[in-house]
Amino acid sequence: MPFRRAAQLICLGLFLIALAGAAAGLLASPDLFLRLDPVLVGATALAGRALVWAFLPAAIVLGSALLMGRAFCGHICPMGTTIDGGDRVVGHARKSPGSGGGLRPIKYYVLAAILGAALAGVSLVFLAAPLSLITRFYGLLVYPVVERLADGGLAAIRPAAEALDLRSLMFAQIDPPRFATQLFPLTFFGAVFALAKVSPRFWCRYLCPAGALLGAASGKPPIRRRVTDDCIDCGKCARRCPMGAIPGDAPQTTRRRECIACGTCATVCPVNAVAFQSTQSTGSTLSTPSTPPPPVSLERRRILMAGLAGAGAATVGLTNLYGPYPDAGEGQVQAVGLLRPPSALPEKEFLARCVRCGECMAACPTNTLQPIGLKAGWMALFSPAITPRRGYCDPRCHRCADSCPTGAIRPVSDNERIWAKTGTAIIHRQKCLAWEHKKSCMVCDEVCPFDAIDFRREPGNPYAVPHVQEDRCAGCGYCEHFCPVYHEAAIVVTAMGVPRLSEGSFKREATGRGLRLTLKSKAEAATGYPDPAAPSSGGAPGFDSGFDGS
Image (tube, rainbow, N blue to C red; front, top):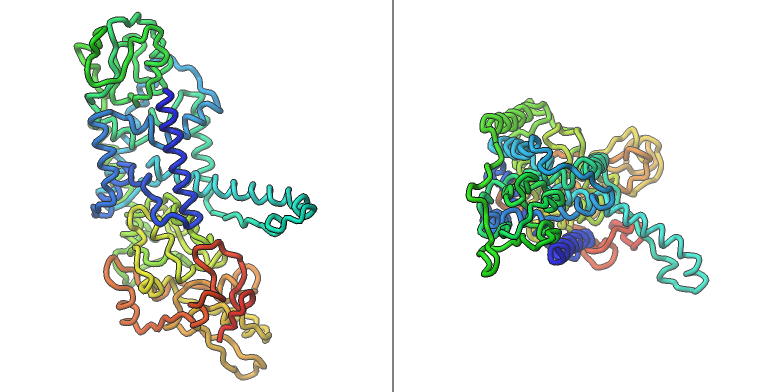
């Protein structure tokens, strides 16, 4: 048990450090834990029709189930560790041994539905894959709260800092990130923690598809629970097992597909009759039942029906009005204002690969990447989109691709990055201060790093008015973000003219379309342009750094 607790805390700590490193821009590729999830990786590879070496860690985890059963669930999985902590805080009910057996097959039905949808080319892992869910919980829910509390702490100690003339603390400030669709992880994990009152590790016992897959692979692992002849049938192990893996009426046996090798039974045994090992001890005889316990009844017909239900739901989603289209063409209805991260795969492939883990959003230094709701249909639920009003998309930054575990956002070189156009700005003249109100305003031109705004004289207007040069616009959103018009900006970025490539050069594609994307000379200098490795200060380059837009 001490070893298990240490392993859990170390793995959870490494997971949180990796997530914090991604948010701070200190780690280039912090997504190893996500690649350990065999369901997340397997369903993504199946839906995206892609198998890459980056998915190898999940294959190792799945292979470990053949040797040690579901040890991954009991020692490494951050979701399991978090649920264990929640169970301790909430306090779980003491269920009778073996209770809830009728619920155990549910996780296999969930797994079958996810794989059925993946066969149809649709990824539903974001609804149930444990590593995706726990990353979203810590990255999009806990992380902003911690930042908010830290900012409140700085405000609380500021009077003392002023009295002691500690200038570093006097002027320190934290701009906590904000994220949309937080209700889902809040409600989901609230329910997961509350279900501890029904049974410990309720999610792991009955619902987790990764646990189902590992359980299916761990029929008779060499390293497993063994009971000696010293057993006195007290039943204490069965009552304390967090997974209900020990039948109360036969404590010498084990439901091997449920056992997570946590060692609780060995710790509580009053006569030390339980051990986890591969060979029999030389002392008391370690035994396993002469007749192995029957496996969990998967009820093949129900499993098949669950898989067909997943495939059917995926097919229905593909016929949704806002469903992804494989190629551009007439009659396609796209969500208004949907801007994907730079170098995102074509929409259908992007949604098949994206697991909605939130890594890219937590890593985004300007907080422009946000999870969307139903604006692009339910198949795009919780996927990332650029929100220029919240923050601009720095054309020298590509943290989103560096942190993406499945390649839904293509990593590209620095030279290719600026050609990965995310949209094109358009001007709502009836809102523009220069066009409609005949006032002098040049903010969009002053902040545009691509010099895509051209000011011209128009009859009847005493001031020059802005025009967008579409062949020079990369859709970075600086103009929309800093536009002084309240609420909805007078200049907005649309998804017009965006290259979405599975492979090939963005520069070649963009130049072939006649684009001329060049950063301003001062934007490439060390001054006058925000460092993508540093948090956004929220200021406009044209006003805060001497960036005059010439």
